[in-house]
Length: 215
Image (cartoon, rainbow, N blue to C red; front, top):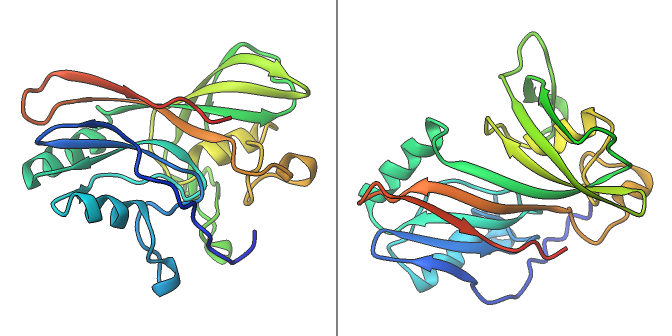
C-alpha cells in the first residue's frame, strides 16, 4: 500500500437525518477519524462536522471500506447508540467480493483475533490470547473466479471480516493488508457496509438504513 493519503473529493452523501441521528454513506479511501499528523486530518468526521458542528462519533469503518455510518447529533444519542454497538444490538450487514469460488452456500467463521503487534495495525488469529470473533456469511453469486458474499459479523473486532475471509482461503479482493497476488490487484477493497439496523435513540423504534454497493 502506498503511504500517500489521497481521499476522494466527493460530496457528503446523506442517507437519513433527524434531530438525533445522521446517517451517511462513507466513500472508500476516506478515514473515519483523523490520523496522526496534518496530512491525515481529512476524514469523514471532519467533513460531517463541517456541515453539522454538533455531530459526534459513534463507530468507525476502515479507511478502505465504504458504506453506512451513523453519527449522533446529541450527547444523549451518542450514549444510547454507543451502548447499542457495545451490546451488539446494532446489526451490520456487509457486501464483499472475495477471491475464488466459495463452494458452500452459507457458513460461520469462529476464529479469535488479536492485534499482530510487530505488524500493527494488522490482526491475526490467536487461539490462546485472541478475543472471540464470529462472522456468518452467505454466497450471493459467482463472478469470473470470484464470489460475491453477504457478511454478518456477530462481533466487532478490528479487521474481523478481512482476516476471517483470508483465513478460509477467500481474501477480500483489493485488500492491501491481507490479499496477495492477483487478489490484491483491484482498484479498491471490495468491502461495503451495506445495511445498519438500530433503535432510534429517542423513540426506541427499530430503523434500517442501506447504501448500495458501488462495485
